Image 1 (tube, helix red, strand yellow):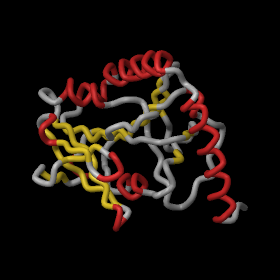
Image 2 (cartoon, helix red, strand yellow; image 1 turned 90 degrees about the horizontal axis):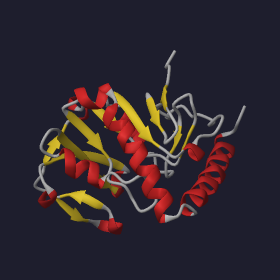
Image 3 (cartoon, one colour; image 1 turned 60 degrees about the vertical axis):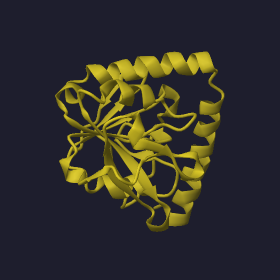
Length: 195
């Protein structure tokens, strides 16, 4: 049985290794992979059917989501996170246009304070970020647990986008870890059975 501090160390090591691989992608490679992954997402019946979609705004090395968000603002209710560092929590906010976002703390793009806050239970589909994934639906994020806390309140399907090298055989899951339902890479769509 893994001790809790051992699990943290294992996850930190895996996170660092995958982070390095992500940074080594050239701009051209990244653009092509991102395009393929986003195209697969847009073809999913879950995406087509959903009206209220929660989606993260990508950082530099993550699969880019800003164009996806911009292109879907008219057809879908797009909901993005605001990070509350003090509480290690996220709140969800509906945005209607680019005017509803600002460059917040730590260069994070966030919803403006006046945007409408949304109850996580109202979300039809959630696109959840992560650094490393396994095919049991477990993920390693950035180590703060923001999305594990949020995932507990989401009643919808949870999707993650990843490069195929971000998948490993097995992530040592902890009690608080919340699995995703679908993992999309440039090679394949993995539907995870939660049996």
